[in-house]
Image (spheres, rainbow, N blue to C red):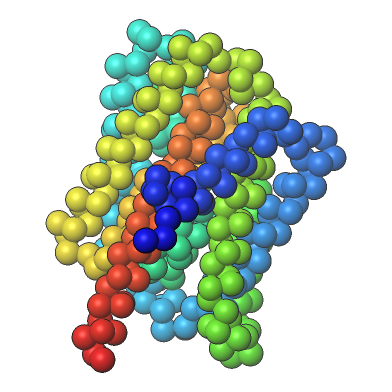
Length: 335
């Protein structure tokens, strides 16, 4: 009997190793100065291209179905702006005696942020979920979050700041929606070409996630991620963030199944409803917490961002394996 490769015998996902590798590289060789600017532009370009490809691959009927799937959109918004804040507030209060005020408030702050966009949709695609609905759900979450997050911060943390950001709205339109619309417009010309190369494009999906991990973690390292945290606080934050994510993943999975959503829609609710956006959170923190220790306030978010990427990478691959097994069984039955 042939011996399996070591990673197969240990059941280690190579993609997780790649994500951990990006964290290590960013910790040892973070992007600084001009290289940080270059990586930021590269990441923005990769994300824009990713959305262009999504637009080119999705049929017009699928996009319309995603937009009009109001039950799914409400489920994602409920998870992001109701379920998550309630859990974050409770855990933040319980952690207050163990952490500094900035770190405990930072836990609450991350819980009221909108969902990520690029990674939610990329993981939905990897997991064989409803990508068109994910595009709509993640984008809507960010649009709503521009106004709602500062209001929630004001309610639960007695903080004040300017809620609406024209720059954030412009970035969403230019980086995400415009490429997606362009891909849709060119679908008659490129759709069949993209369909024939789904396997190759899946590597681009995952490569974009790796680039996001390196760029985001580099920023945290440059701003003193490891210098500002004592080891005990770091371990406690990791445990709290992991617990918070595990609870939300479990509740969103249970909610989607109890409400009778399909597997493809369940994937959207789980991925879009369980993530928090570092890209939106850091700029908002700079506005909402002027004069406070912004670096420490966003530390729980920075750690949560890495945990959610690694956990959802495992989950996405598991969903994909289930979908491929179901397709294979269906093909065997048909044969």
